Length: 271
Image 1 (tube, rainbow, N blue to C red):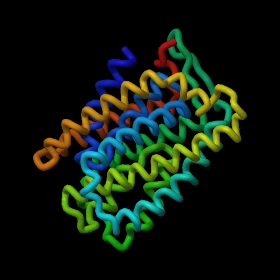
Image 2: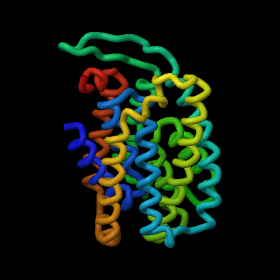
Image 3: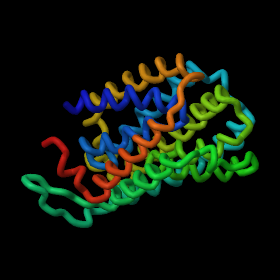
Protein backbone atom coordinates (compact mmCIF):
# COMPACT_ATOMS: atom_id res chain seq x y z
CA UNK A 1 0.00 0.00 0.00
CA UNK A 2 2.80 2.44 0.88
CA UNK A 3 4.45 1.90 -2.53
CA UNK A 4 1.16 2.43 -4.35
CA UNK A 5 0.56 5.72 -2.54
CA UNK A 6 4.08 7.08 -3.07
CA UNK A 7 4.26 6.03 -6.74
CA UNK A 8 0.87 7.58 -7.55
CA UNK A 9 1.66 10.83 -5.76
CA UNK A 10 5.13 11.06 -7.37
CA UNK A 11 3.75 10.43 -10.86
CA UNK A 12 1.16 13.18 -10.56
CA UNK A 13 3.44 15.60 -8.73
CA UNK A 14 6.25 15.08 -11.25
CA UNK A 15 3.97 16.40 -13.99
CA UNK A 16 2.58 19.23 -11.84
CA UNK A 17 5.97 20.61 -10.86
CA UNK A 18 7.03 20.91 -14.50
CA UNK A 19 4.15 23.26 -15.24
CA UNK A 20 4.18 25.34 -12.09
CA UNK A 21 7.77 25.25 -10.82
CA UNK A 22 6.64 23.55 -7.64
CA UNK A 23 4.72 20.47 -6.64
CA UNK A 24 6.85 17.34 -6.16
CA UNK A 25 8.54 18.13 -2.84
CA UNK A 26 5.54 20.13 -1.63
CA UNK A 27 3.22 17.17 -2.02
CA UNK A 28 5.63 14.27 -1.45
CA UNK A 29 7.04 15.46 1.91
CA UNK A 30 3.84 15.09 3.95
CA UNK A 31 3.13 11.77 2.21
CA UNK A 32 6.58 10.45 3.19
CA UNK A 33 5.90 11.76 6.70
CA UNK A 34 3.05 9.28 7.02
CA UNK A 35 5.54 6.42 6.63
CA UNK A 36 8.68 7.86 8.28
CA UNK A 37 9.65 10.37 11.01
CA UNK A 38 9.84 13.99 9.80
CA UNK A 39 13.66 14.20 9.44
CA UNK A 40 13.71 11.01 7.35
CA UNK A 41 10.80 12.31 5.28
CA UNK A 42 12.66 15.55 4.56
CA UNK A 43 15.88 13.77 3.57
CA UNK A 44 14.06 11.22 1.40
CA UNK A 45 12.04 13.94 -0.31
CA UNK A 46 15.19 15.96 -0.98
CA UNK A 47 16.81 13.00 -2.76
CA UNK A 48 13.74 12.40 -4.93
CA UNK A 49 13.43 16.12 -5.61
CA UNK A 50 17.04 16.44 -6.74
CA UNK A 51 16.90 13.42 -9.04
CA UNK A 52 13.62 14.67 -10.48
CA UNK A 53 15.13 18.10 -11.10
CA UNK A 54 18.18 16.60 -12.80
CA UNK A 55 15.91 14.56 -15.05
CA UNK A 56 13.88 17.69 -15.84
CA UNK A 57 17.05 19.58 -16.70
CA UNK A 58 17.76 16.99 -19.39
CA UNK A 59 14.36 17.81 -20.86
CA UNK A 60 14.14 21.58 -20.36
CA UNK A 61 17.62 22.75 -19.25
CA UNK A 62 18.23 24.54 -22.55
CA UNK A 63 15.40 26.92 -21.67
CA UNK A 64 17.22 28.32 -18.60
CA UNK A 65 17.81 32.08 -18.39
CA UNK A 66 21.39 32.29 -17.05
CA UNK A 67 21.14 35.87 -15.77
CA UNK A 68 18.12 35.04 -13.63
CA UNK A 69 19.75 31.78 -12.53
CA UNK A 70 22.77 33.66 -11.16
CA UNK A 71 20.77 36.41 -9.42
CA UNK A 72 18.26 34.01 -7.89
CA UNK A 73 20.01 30.65 -7.70
CA UNK A 74 23.23 31.61 -5.89
CA UNK A 75 21.48 33.40 -2.97
CA UNK A 76 19.06 30.47 -2.82
CA UNK A 77 21.91 27.95 -2.45
CA UNK A 78 23.52 29.91 0.38
CA UNK A 79 20.23 30.34 2.24
CA UNK A 80 19.38 26.65 1.75
CA UNK A 81 22.45 25.68 3.78
CA UNK A 82 21.29 27.88 6.66
CA UNK A 83 17.78 26.44 6.55
CA UNK A 84 19.06 22.86 6.36
CA UNK A 85 21.41 23.28 9.32
CA UNK A 86 18.57 24.79 11.33
CA UNK A 87 16.42 21.79 10.49
CA UNK A 88 19.18 19.49 11.72
CA UNK A 89 19.15 21.29 15.06
CA UNK A 90 15.35 21.17 15.38
CA UNK A 91 15.29 17.53 14.27
CA UNK A 92 17.63 16.57 17.13
CA UNK A 93 15.24 17.95 19.77
CA UNK A 94 13.17 15.47 21.85
CA UNK A 95 9.42 14.99 21.47
CA UNK A 96 7.18 17.60 23.09
CA UNK A 97 4.42 15.18 24.05
CA UNK A 98 2.67 11.96 23.07
CA UNK A 99 -0.98 10.97 23.33
CA UNK A 100 -3.07 7.93 22.48
CA UNK A 101 -5.15 7.76 19.30
CA UNK A 102 -7.19 4.58 19.26
CA UNK A 103 -4.76 1.68 19.29
CA UNK A 104 -1.88 3.92 18.16
CA UNK A 105 0.07 6.83 19.57
CA UNK A 106 0.51 10.36 18.22
CA UNK A 107 3.78 12.18 18.90
CA UNK A 108 4.20 15.93 18.66
CA UNK A 109 7.83 16.77 17.96
CA UNK A 110 9.49 20.16 17.38
CA UNK A 111 10.50 19.20 13.83
CA UNK A 112 7.05 17.81 13.02
CA UNK A 113 5.40 20.93 14.43
CA UNK A 114 7.66 23.30 12.46
CA UNK A 115 7.36 21.42 9.17
CA UNK A 116 3.63 20.81 9.62
CA UNK A 117 2.98 24.52 10.16
CA UNK A 118 5.08 25.36 7.10
CA UNK A 119 3.15 22.81 5.03
CA UNK A 120 -0.06 24.58 6.10
CA UNK A 121 1.36 28.00 5.21
CA UNK A 122 2.50 26.85 1.79
CA UNK A 123 -0.82 25.08 1.30
CA UNK A 124 -2.50 28.45 1.79
CA UNK A 125 -0.07 29.99 -0.71
CA UNK A 126 -1.13 27.35 -3.23
CA UNK A 127 -4.65 28.80 -3.07
CA UNK A 128 -3.41 32.23 -4.14
CA UNK A 129 -2.92 33.48 -7.68
CA UNK A 130 0.87 33.79 -7.97
CA UNK A 131 0.59 36.06 -10.99
CA UNK A 132 -1.14 38.58 -8.73
CA UNK A 133 1.38 37.99 -5.93
CA UNK A 134 4.46 38.27 -8.16
CA UNK A 135 7.43 40.53 -7.44
CA UNK A 136 9.48 42.60 -9.86
CA UNK A 137 12.86 41.45 -11.20
CA UNK A 138 14.85 43.68 -8.84
CA UNK A 139 13.80 41.48 -5.91
CA UNK A 140 15.29 38.29 -7.39
CA UNK A 141 18.18 38.03 -4.85
CA UNK A 142 15.73 38.50 -1.95
CA UNK A 143 13.46 35.89 -3.47
CA UNK A 144 16.39 33.51 -3.76
CA UNK A 145 17.24 33.96 -0.09
CA UNK A 146 13.66 33.36 1.06
CA UNK A 147 13.00 30.44 -1.28
CA UNK A 148 16.34 28.80 -0.48
CA UNK A 149 15.95 29.18 3.28
CA UNK A 150 12.51 27.58 3.38
CA UNK A 151 13.68 24.99 0.86
CA UNK A 152 16.44 23.98 3.26
CA UNK A 153 14.20 24.14 6.32
CA UNK A 154 11.18 22.23 5.02
CA UNK A 155 11.69 21.51 1.33
CA UNK A 156 8.99 24.01 0.38
CA UNK A 157 10.84 26.34 -1.95
CA UNK A 158 8.65 26.28 -5.05
CA UNK A 159 5.77 28.58 -4.17
CA UNK A 160 8.12 31.44 -3.23
CA UNK A 161 10.36 30.73 -6.21
CA UNK A 162 7.40 30.91 -8.57
CA UNK A 163 6.19 34.16 -7.01
CA UNK A 164 9.54 35.84 -7.70
CA UNK A 165 10.23 34.29 -11.12
CA UNK A 166 6.74 34.82 -12.52
CA UNK A 167 7.50 38.50 -13.23
CA UNK A 168 11.16 38.18 -14.11
CA UNK A 169 10.43 38.70 -17.81
CA UNK A 170 10.58 34.99 -18.64
CA UNK A 171 8.42 33.27 -21.19
CA UNK A 172 6.77 29.99 -20.21
CA UNK A 173 9.66 27.79 -21.39
CA UNK A 174 12.29 29.98 -19.73
CA UNK A 175 10.26 29.92 -16.50
CA UNK A 176 10.13 26.11 -16.55
CA UNK A 177 13.84 25.71 -17.32
CA UNK A 178 15.04 28.34 -14.86
CA UNK A 179 12.81 26.99 -12.08
CA UNK A 180 14.21 23.50 -12.56
CA UNK A 181 17.81 24.78 -12.51
CA UNK A 182 17.32 26.94 -9.39
CA UNK A 183 15.53 24.12 -7.61
CA UNK A 184 18.35 21.66 -8.39
CA UNK A 185 20.92 24.11 -6.98
CA UNK A 186 18.99 24.35 -3.72
CA UNK A 187 18.61 20.56 -3.55
CA UNK A 188 22.36 20.00 -3.87
CA UNK A 189 23.11 22.57 -1.17
CA UNK A 190 20.54 21.32 1.31
CA UNK A 191 21.39 17.65 0.88
CA UNK A 192 25.05 18.37 1.62
CA UNK A 193 24.02 20.35 4.69
CA UNK A 194 21.63 17.62 5.86
CA UNK A 195 24.26 14.90 5.70
CA UNK A 196 27.09 16.98 7.18
CA UNK A 197 24.87 18.35 9.93
CA UNK A 198 23.40 14.93 10.68
CA UNK A 199 26.87 13.40 10.99
CA UNK A 200 27.91 16.06 13.47
CA UNK A 201 24.71 15.93 15.50
CA UNK A 202 23.87 12.25 15.68
CA UNK A 203 27.34 10.70 15.40
CA UNK A 204 26.35 7.77 13.23
CA UNK A 205 23.25 6.71 15.16
CA UNK A 206 20.15 5.62 13.26
CA UNK A 207 18.02 8.50 14.44
CA UNK A 208 17.07 11.54 12.37
CA UNK A 209 18.54 11.78 8.86
CA UNK A 210 20.82 8.83 9.59
CA UNK A 211 17.87 6.47 9.08
CA UNK A 212 17.10 7.59 5.50
CA UNK A 213 18.47 4.26 4.24
CA UNK A 214 15.27 2.70 5.58
CA UNK A 215 13.40 4.59 2.86
CA UNK A 216 15.53 3.57 -0.15
CA UNK A 217 12.84 1.41 -1.71
CA UNK A 218 10.25 4.18 -1.63
CA UNK A 219 12.86 6.75 -2.70
CA UNK A 220 13.74 4.72 -5.81
CA UNK A 221 10.08 4.19 -6.67
CA UNK A 222 9.32 7.88 -6.23
CA UNK A 223 12.30 8.88 -8.42
CA UNK A 224 11.15 6.69 -11.32
CA UNK A 225 7.53 7.79 -11.01
CA UNK A 226 8.51 11.46 -10.73
CA UNK A 227 10.62 11.24 -13.88
CA UNK A 228 7.82 9.55 -15.81
CA UNK A 229 5.43 12.28 -14.68
CA UNK A 230 7.84 14.99 -15.82
CA UNK A 231 8.47 13.19 -19.13
CA UNK A 232 4.77 13.02 -19.92
CA UNK A 233 4.16 16.53 -18.63
CA UNK A 234 6.84 18.00 -20.91
CA UNK A 235 4.66 17.02 -23.88
CA UNK A 236 1.83 19.22 -22.62
CA UNK A 237 3.71 22.18 -21.16
CA UNK A 238 2.11 24.65 -23.59
CA UNK A 239 -1.44 23.39 -23.09
CA UNK A 240 -2.15 22.88 -19.42
CA UNK A 241 -3.87 25.26 -16.99
CA UNK A 242 -3.78 24.15 -13.39
CA UNK A 243 -5.92 26.58 -11.38
CA UNK A 244 -8.37 23.92 -10.22
CA UNK A 245 -5.51 21.49 -9.51
CA UNK A 246 -3.71 24.17 -7.47
CA UNK A 247 -6.82 24.60 -5.32
CA UNK A 248 -7.07 20.86 -4.69
CA UNK A 249 -3.36 20.65 -3.85
CA UNK A 250 -3.64 23.59 -1.45
CA UNK A 251 -6.50 22.00 0.47
CA UNK A 252 -4.69 18.64 0.58
CA UNK A 253 -1.52 20.26 1.93
CA UNK A 254 -3.41 22.04 4.69
CA UNK A 255 -4.92 18.72 5.81
CA UNK A 256 -1.57 16.90 5.64
CA UNK A 257 0.15 19.76 7.48
CA UNK A 258 -2.37 19.42 10.30
CA UNK A 259 -1.58 15.70 10.54
CA UNK A 260 2.15 16.49 10.86
CA UNK A 261 1.81 19.38 13.30
CA UNK A 262 -0.55 17.50 15.63
CA UNK A 263 1.51 14.30 15.52
CA UNK A 264 -1.35 12.30 13.98
CA UNK A 265 0.89 11.33 11.06
CA UNK A 266 2.85 9.15 13.49
CA UNK A 267 -0.35 7.44 14.59
CA UNK A 268 -1.16 6.57 10.96
CA UNK A 269 2.33 5.22 10.31
CA UNK A 270 2.44 1.47 9.49
CA UNK A 271 3.93 -0.61 12.27
